Length: 234
Image (tube, rainbow, N blue to C red; front, side, top):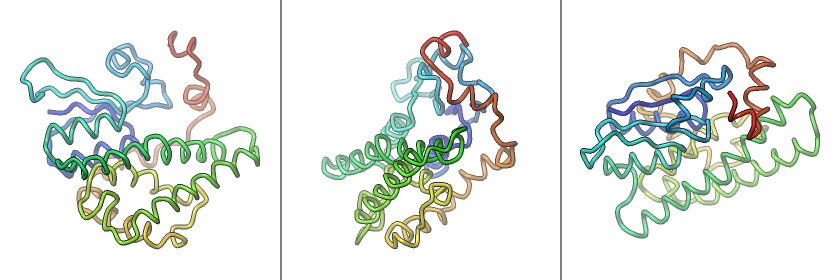
């Protein structure tokens, strides 16, 4: 059983997408990030960066004590290795899938996240910052569109954790001020991943929270006002 500490954000959706695809039993523990659940001592004990998602695997492959994993890319890799699914086993295929997983973790996710922040959440709308991250998101969409030219999925013909990592960060394309029709290969891939039964189930998991109220001003302070000192004292 996988204990999944989760909130319905792009990084959270990555993990439910994998778990629904592979059919591994899991139980969700909501981590309301705008309420500060990520600062609770019991959560910080195994997710020291005070971010979700994180997991506890109560039945690890070595049969020993439960294993905890934080960071969505590390979780996807751990689960793929645990189950033998959605990560190629040949050296070249694995290398490619891991390259694109790291591309998402280091590029698409952070840049799209800053796009959301300055375009939606920032109290002062700074044109330079908005344009910077809208343009960088656009560049990264172009990188992915070119990668998908002649390929069914990001790593090649097989669906992998690289696709699961990237897809949730393209879902809010309208909020990112992008137009998927400008990227025909990306659009074709996006529609194919969206139609997968496991993707539909994964997003339905977060459905009860999808109509939750907008983030309050206090919630924004919790989400965006952290320093080393405030994180340590919450």
